[in-house]
Image (tube, rainbow, N blue to C red; front, side):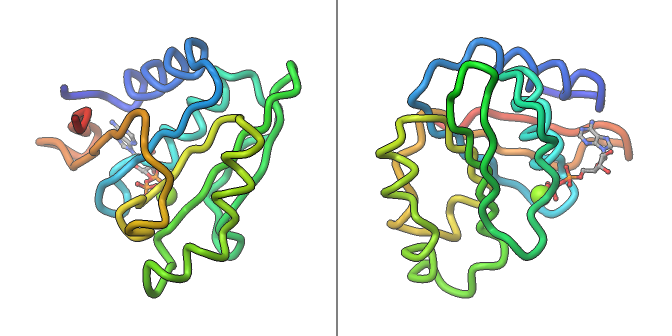
Amino acid sequence: MRLSADALNRFGETIGRELAAPAVIGLSGELGTGKTTLVQAICRGLGTHDLATSPTYALVHRYRTPGGLAVYHVDCYRLRSPAEAQDLGFDDMMREAGIVLIEWPERAGPWAPPLDRHFQLSYGRDADTRELEEVR
Ligand SMILES: Nc1ncnc2c1ncn2[C@@H]1O[C@H](COP(=O)(O)OP(=O)(O)O)[C@@H](O)[C@H]1O
Ligand SMILES: [Mg+2]
């Protein structure tokens, strides 16, 4: 579907509000297509207070919902090889049974946990729209 920035934000907030833990969500797409924007919207929907800014050096950011649920934002963009994902702590995240939001999950190869939902973002026809598809 084609989404404006507003619509993409609303979409993410709705997902966050309706998300039941444990859940793993993957977000794929070129740089600048809105993966981090969508993560931030999902976090707003979940009610986390911290803003999930794009992890620049830290590949993993950890948040908590008001209800005490752990929320992880993992950005695999800077992994030089899938094997480096072994150090990200996916096993521990899964043991916490919280919410795990993964940008570029394909870069973690077989070390990424199974995705419950997987969204693919791409550039739209003009600068302010994006195409979002659910990968099934
Ligand atoms: N329809 C849209 N949906 C999401 N982001 C948009 C849209 N239109 C413009 N943008 C802009 O595109 C950029 C997306 O950046 P970001 O979410 O960091 O992308 P990524 O994490 O995929 O690299 C933001 O600056 C955002 O304001
Ligand atoms: Mg990003």
